[in-house]
Picture 1 (tube, rainbow, N blue to C red):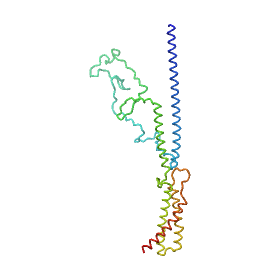
Picture 2: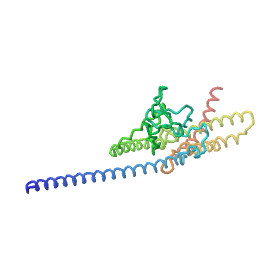
Picture 3: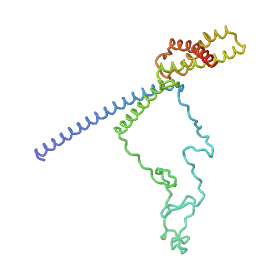
Picture 4: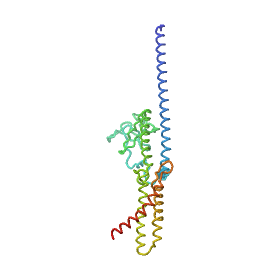
Length: 299
């Protein structure tokens, strides 16, 4: 080998080594990026898990109920365990041409058409054209077969190679979708069960007004009872001026605290106590005055 050929071979080897180093550096950088993306997704999924736990505790669910599990080895004959039972062999065994006969079966010599087997089939003429009996060798392992409904023993296909970049991208999209659904769940959890689309002020006004209206119905009942002599005037005035308005106010306060409170809210939602007090203590007496005016107008 001349010096020029040796130098060219050395340059080729050096270029090949530099190319291998570049490929190794690129592969190392790719692996680092994949590990960083996997760590970021792990952190996101962990945060989503904590947030889902908070949402579950807010709606009264600590953890999902565990499904029934069957004890291993105690499967009934009719239960399904995911693996179909193997039916017992009921027919004669099928032998293919060229396969060794089953263990324990006699070896039949002959041509198979009812004629003589020649020198190999004559008793006492061993070695004259006779075939030596070969030992039966059992196969150590069987090829994996795919279980199909037709029961055909088709070799199972190998799983395709998984691209980590594609899998990470799919996981990222699923995490984004989970974040979107989580935000929607949080928005729903921040709405109370009672009049969820109303503002807190409008909800409080509606609740106190409804309680005042219910107190007005009780006031009419007391007025009718006073007309027949069951309730005296002092008791009627005390209930109209203080008793029924107080019942309406506390009823609205309790309703707002029970059904007007969102499942997830920071602090205590406003109940507008001065406004409720004003509505309840004005609505019942005004209702009584309206009743008196209507009664005199009809007379």
